[in-house]
Length: 55
Image (tube, rainbow, N blue to C red; front, side):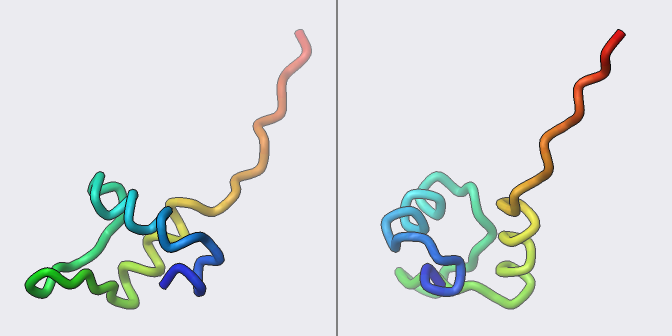
């Protein structure tokens, strides 16, 4: 999962612990569905900077 997102494992662990990323628990194990991964990509994709209007 961390490799797919190109982030450290610790980043994923922190986000899961804080419940900031979609995931599923199976016992003590954390699992991610394809829908979870797609939601993660949308959540954390880089967004273009907003243009400032000159007035």
